[in-house]
Image (cartoon, rainbow, N blue to C red; front, side, top):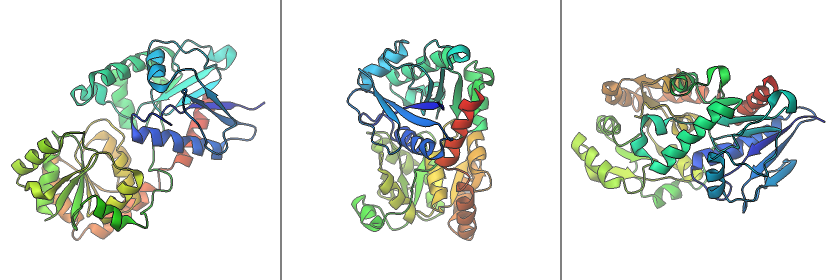
Length: 357
């Protein structure tokens, strides 16, 4: 009998991070598509969830709902899970003692950002405690910890003693990420202006993006804003010289709404240098939106020559070029770079990881 890779799909019903939830589903679909001959993909899901992805060989439904399961696994209690090859596209995994050599049991997890270590004040205390606790369990019990870039791997080495167990497998844009046919109607429903930049980043880093909007004579659309942060973000924009009327703060949007927003964006400005996989950067490049990002190790790894990577002070000038004479060139370069990332490729590397282990 060939290998059976068991994937944790914990956010099918209770979504705590939409990007990671989507990544888990897209990766699983890729694992099914790229399964070696004789191998199969199974799912491990919390109680109350239903895994309907085509091609799954089996679904193990556990006795606890997602919230209770997270607490149980944090304590190292994982009844009913079973062994074998287990892969999680997040830190949510049954990280307990197992025997890889004799029983061929493997458990691998994925870390997409280090905010719980680099910017803990931006997250709920319970989230910080859970992520730190699960990484400590990963140090003890994970056979590998997957991260999305080499710069991320280097930074994680400073945070946790994982040695050679850190492996690099990048993420990608959502499968089938294209501009929807009703893109204009979606933008109208979001009350977006005709000319705008998309900004991403924390409240403390967005000022450079607002100065860039002034330089580009455009409005600013802030994506992924925390709930209730709009007044504070508007104040930061106003202090930078951009009137509040030209600032449009949006919280989490659906995949289709994001694609509609990017379809009309003059550029994406990524202002956060933190160690996180830049989901929106990859989406923007996929749709040919010029990208300007503050210099960081992760941005250099991911964007490479597909956009402008500059210091904070250089962002306004870089954006002025990106929406002006450099627009066409940067659109092409970004689109070319985006082809380096796909869930099919990532899935093949996950299969390779478990074969190596």
